[in-house]
Structure formats: structure tokens, C-alpha cells
Length: 275
Image (cartoon, rainbow, N blue to C red; front, top):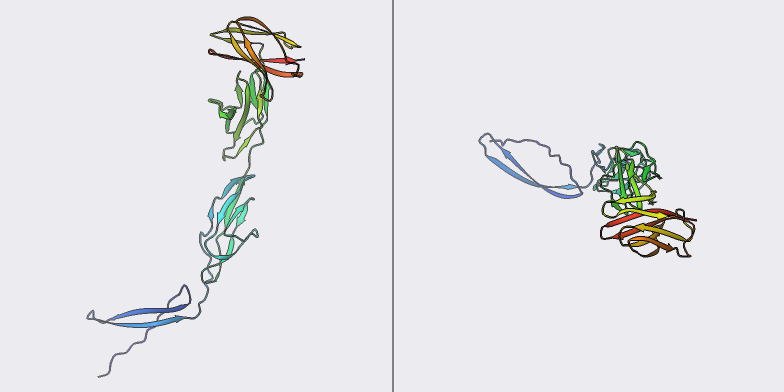
């Protein structure tokens, strides 16, 4: 009796050249099967022409002056649309980016295209002083934060900061897209002629402007410091309750200074002008 015969075709797509082993099970109507084993040698392959999908990963937005870091899939021979030739690049301008590369089969692949957007940053803020107010030059940012001697100022989240505490201040402004700009440091000296303290009373300093000698009238004992606009102490000493006459060091040049008084009850600050 003649045996049944059949023809069939096997197609496979290797991911590298070499010899492969295949097993085929052929079932009949009684659920019986016969197994065939054979070997296939892959001597060549045809590169697919379809683009890769979602092969570039990374940020798609950044703030001007910074960059967006984007990365291609693993391969070799990278060539990006901006001419760069590495797996990971830093995009520093807005635009569309894609990359060509060779995959593990040495096939040329075209990536997807992503759009990178550079968001604007605020103008660099400039601090000015009016009386005992510090004013930021940027009128309408979505975020303000003042800093004093490098630390957050609690509640300092508006364009104008009211303070009587001398020291170094700066401000950070942000846009709704979270891009920021930082001011230069501003050395603040309180612009008041007298300062009231509940526990010590009124501090009086006269004359002001001063020449070679300054008088300080207080109601408690204090340690005093004279500080220049750079925040450097140029003279220090002690004063007692009542009127104190202090001769200024000859090294103190003409300009604006702050007299700072400290004791266990707190601190008093007042601006003086040396003529």
C-alpha cells in the first residue's frame, strides 16, 4: 500500500548567523504524531526596512542654558540628526531629533523622531533697597523665594521683602514651567535712625553721619560690632547702659556701615554713614 506523502515549508528569521535545530510534530486525526528533527544553517539574512518604535528615551523639555539628555537603543555606528555620534547625547536647542544606528544583525535602523523644547528662563533678578524693603526687579513671576545668609527666609515668597536684619540676601524666581534665575547677593543694612526693642528700649546713635567719633545711647550692656557692606567686621568692643562715646578706628574709610549690638536679649542693628 502506498504511503501518504506531504510537502511543507518552514520559514524562520534568525537573529544571528549559524546552525539551528528545529523539531516538527505532525499529528493525524487520531491525535497520534510523528516527530521530525532537522538542522538549518543561516548563511545570510535580509534587513527589515521598518523604523524602530520608541527607541529614544529621555527628557523632552529643558530650561534654556541647560540641556535634555536623550538615549538611543543599543547598537553601533550612531549618527544623530544633529551630527553627534554617541548612544546618549545632550540636546541644547529646541528641535526634532532622530538617530540612525546599526543593530545586532548589522542592519541600519532609523529611530522614531522626538521633539525637544527649550523653555525660557526668567530675566536675572536685580535687588534694590527702599528703606527697610528689599525689592526684586522681576514683576510677575509665579514663584519667589528670598534667602538670608544662604538659608530660606520663612514667608519670604513675594516680590518685596520687609526686614530689619542686616546681612546678605538673594532671591530665586521661577516661571510656571519651573525654570529659575538667581540674583546676585545684596548686602542689606537697615536704613533706620532708631530701633525699638521691647526688652531694651530705644537705641540712639548720633551724630549720623559721623566723622571720627560716634555716640551710642542704650539701656543695657552690649557687645558691639561695626560691619562694612561686604559683611566684614572692622571694629568691635563693649558698651554699657547709658551714653557711650566710641572713637572710630583710623582704618575705617568713608562709606556706609552697620553698628550691630548683641546681648542675651537679642540684637540691634543700625546703619551709619562715615564721612
